[in-house]
Length: 395
Image (cartoon, rainbow, N blue to C red):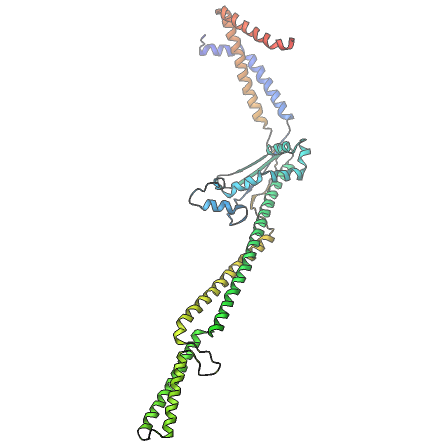
C-alpha cells in the first residue's frame, strides 16, 4: 500500500471534520481542566557559597580539597562546601524538623513520616548554579506558605551550621584546655630547672657575673704588680730580714693566692657570686639550654591561650552562618498549571490522534476493497483479541 503526497492531502481534506472536532474538543477540555487544577506558587532563595573554614562543618572537606592526591575513604568529601550545604538541606534531620514545625504530616494527610518526607521532597528543589550559588526553591498552594517553607529551610540550615560550629568549638576548647594545663606544667618544670641550676652553680646572670669577675681579677692583678714592683725596689736597699720587705712579700703571696682562688671560682669577697673560669663555657651552655626551654614553653603557652580564647568565642557565638543573596520571594504569579502549555500540547495531541484514526480508517477501507483476505484476517484477529479480553469477565 503506497500513498503519494496528493493522496495524503485528499485524505486529510475528506476527514477535516474529525480533525476540527477533535481539535476543538481537546482544546476545550484541556482548558477546562487547567482552570480547575490547583494553583502552585514557587518561592526561591539564593545563598552565597560558604567560605572554607578550618573547623566545623567544612573543615574536613576543605582539607580534602587541599590535598594534592586522592585519599582512599574520603573521596566523597572532595566536593565543595556548596555541596555540603545541599546535603544538609536534604538531610533527614532538617526535613523532619520542617515537617514538625509546620505539622506537615497532617497537612499532607500522611499516615507515616516517610510518606510526609516523600511529599516534602516532591515540593522542594536544591541545586547550585555554575557560579556556585545555592538555590532553594519550594512550591505550595499559597504564595505565603511557599515563602515560609523556603525561609524555614534557610533557618534550619543556619541552625545546623551553628550547632556544628559550637560542637566543634567545644571539642577544640576542651582539648586546648587540657593541653594548656600540660603547657603550664612544662613551663613550671623549666622554671624549676633554672632555679635548681642557679642554686647549684650560683649562676644567676652568667654574662654579668663573668664581666664582674674579669674586672675584679684585673684589679687584683694590678695590685699584685704594684706590690711586686714595691718588693723589687725594697730588695735593692733592704736586707732580706727587714720587716717591711717581709710584709710586702707576704702581700704579694697573698694577692697571688687570691688570683688563683678567683680562677677556681672561690670569691675573695664574702657572699660574692664567683664562677670558676674553666667551668664558664659549660655552665653557659647549660644556662642557654634551660633558658631556651623556658622561652619555648612561654611561646607554646601564649599560642595555646590565643587558641583557647578563640575556641571560647566560637563556642558562644550565635551569629548567622549563611549569607543570603536573595531572600525567599513572595511569588506574585503562579508557577503551575501552565494553561497555555496544557492547551497547546492537548491540541497537538488531538491532531496526532486524529491523523492516526483517519490513517487506520483509510487503510482498512483500502484493504477491504483491494485485499479482502488480509482485511478478513485483520478483523478476525481483532475479534479474537476482543474475545480474549472479555473472557475473564464472563467467568
